[in-house]
Amino acid sequence: MTMADSTEGKPTDNAKGTNLGIAASRSPIGENKGWIRNLILYEDDQTDYDDSMFFTFRPNIVRQQLAATYEKIRVMGMSHQYSSFSHTENNVFTFEIYFNALMMMKERARRGKVEGDEQARNDLALISQEIEKSRRFLESLLLPYEEPSGTIGSEPPPVLVFLPGYFTVRARALNLTLNFTDCDPRGNIKELAINATFEEAPMARITMRDQLAAGTFRTWGI
Image (cartoon, rainbow, N blue to C red; front, side):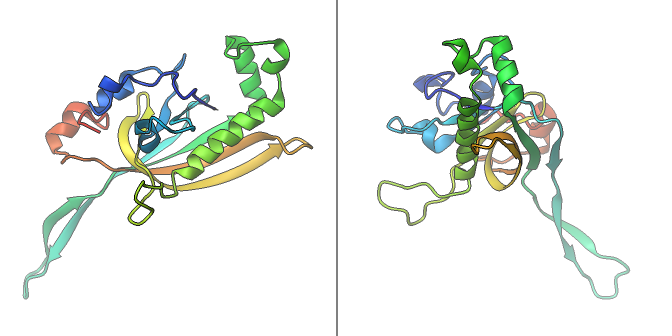
């Protein structure tokens, strides 16, 4: 998994703020396996950091949890309770984000994704740095961003999460579990698996008909 260049694959300014369908229909780099976009960095033209992270390895198992909540109305002497609909819980998605430096080098060499000499193409340290960069990107999604007027009232950034065939949603990161399984003697990460949980954070009411028509591929404005 690599971080995209700060401009590569980024929609033009006139595409910002349109809808999730347009954003997700773009294929930022090559064979698209999905991506996560930090909407705060995406809107910041002065940032020195990449606003998106693209999956090199498509998550194998994606868990989606959704529930309706009802309030119980208790009537004295009645044989049962009445259920009064309260709300529908936000979609919660859990999946694994996988990094393997050796597999990434082989894939990169096969597809010719790295421009430059052959040594750079097979540099384990370079791949490890990209893994660390992606790790920091994901970890930053759990921390508040700084606002021009200060940090009071700040919160972790909203993101767009796009997994082809599974879902396209505006969400917030809830938790990350990092499992480091291999590194070389110099400390370069060779294998890392991150279990990530995102909760959908829609900006418009979702109805039964919306779900029947588009599923979890949201199309309203971001």
